[in-house]
Every structure is written in structure tokens, then in C-alpha cells.
Image (cartoon, rainbow, N blue to C red; front, side):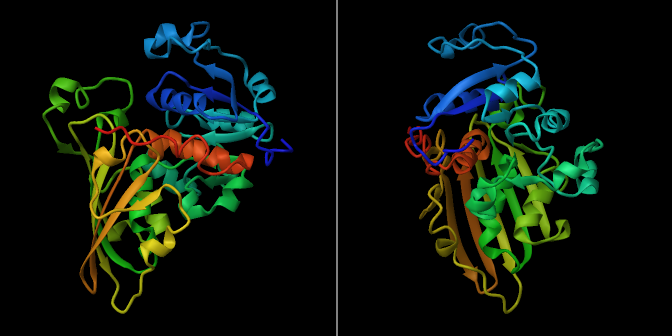
Length: 340
């Protein structure tokens, strides 16, 4: 892996779990990356099928889905992206660890506390020793240097990342935060259900998992608050992509939060706007934020990001760039939002 700082180098990547929305979005971004070569795109169910026969929008892409063993994937790759369902990535990360750099887009290594993981995901964690080795992949919060040195990157959850980016400037000064976040249907994944079926979703809004959502521990950690200081209302919206959130933040008396403009001054994908709109970020890796001071103790924050890009695949590519020594924005900043 020497020489990643040389922009003439090519990074060989594989995607395990290509057929879900996150895997497909990751492939879209990586195909446009100037320093990436795709080694494997894998799926047990679609082994041997050309990607274009499964997804006709990719009929121009000369890739065949395969299902090689993990040792072969590690040998052929510099970085492996895991786009597997939550609770199923644990064994794969453990098998690949030490053989190749891993960027895991599941939730299995986002939390460094086994008890918290098992509480929110209702399943045992079989590799608690690896939780300490995984680095949380939020560059604007964790820092580029820590991510660049990681062997395992745990990509953030989409709700979690937006809420964290909204609250991070106030970390340590928050008395209470109330957040309502509305997400598009793609956040529910490819498998249909009564709650995501388009004839209902297209004209409906409903909230779910209020104050029980699995992303709450991620939000609390970076905001330096407890779950009791947070009201989180995730809501299904009648659109496909994006998350739009509003936070009402009550600050501790006599506290002095940081200025968001200073916190994100060198963060290329953070944009402070006069107003926030989904249409301004969909299809891009940007996160738009707006801060409105109500009084000395109350701030209203609004934010938006694309759940499949900045909330998943785009952030993963951003992390890959940092690991490989490429400019953080490579292959991403050219992705202007889809407007209209």
C-alpha cells in the first residue's frame, strides 16, 4: 500500500454486497473516481451475472458480479467496502481484518461499547476486541489524520451523521436537543414493506422509533450528551432521496458554543446557507446547515444531506480518499447536486 500519496497510483477496490441501494450508489461514485480500479463486486444471489442484466441503468458497465472467497478479495484489493445488512458484517470484518483496509457501511462497528450495541441492535457482538480498532468515519468530527491511519472504518449512519454535524459545534454546551428528521424512502433499503410501499409513502408522513432509533448513541457521543437530553423523531417523507432535519437546541447557562463557521472552515463538503432545502443537496456529497439564534440559550438548526451520498457512499469514498492520500474531495466535489 506504499505510494498512495502519488496521484498516479491506482487503488483497487471491491464492494461486498453490490445489489442494495448503498452498494449501487457506491459503485456509481467509484466508477467516476479517477484513481480507482474495481476488482470485485459481489453478491451470493447474483453470482455470475453481468451487473447490467440485474440493473439496466448500468448496462454500459463491463462488470460481472462474483462471489469469490474473502482471501481472494483481500489479495486483489487495497480497500474493501462492505455494503452488508446490519448484524451480518461482523464475521466478514473479522475475516478481512489485517489483510486489507476495510470501510464498513453497516452499523456493526460504529459503537465502541458492546452493551450499547446489543441494546440498540438486539444481537450479540461477537468481536468486541475489534470495536476498539475501528475508527468512526465522520471526517468533519473525527479528523482526517485519524481516519487516514485506520485499518477499519465504521461509516456513520445517515440520520446520525446529519444530526451530529448539526450539533457538533455545540458539543459540551447542550442542555437539551429536540430533533425532527424527515427521510426519503431510499433510506429504508431495497426490500419492500408496508411502510415503504410507494402508493402509501407517496402521499404520507409518519414518525417511527421515537427516542428508540438505533442512531441515537452515535448522535449522543459526538454531541457529548446523554440519551435523556435528546428527543429524536425520525419521520418517513414522501420523496426518495435526502434527509431534512430541524433541531431545537437549548444551551447550558453561561456556556459558549463554538462558531459553526469556525468548526467547518476547512471542511469542503459543509456549506452554511441562508436557508436549507433538499433540492440543493440531492445527488451530492454536500451537507447544508443553517443556524438561527432565538435567544441567548436557544438555537434552531436546520440541515440536509443525501442519505445515499453524504449519508453513506459519498462519505465512504471521502474516507477512502483520506486513507489513500488523495485529496479529500477527489471524485466527489464534481458531483453537483441534481437540480431541479
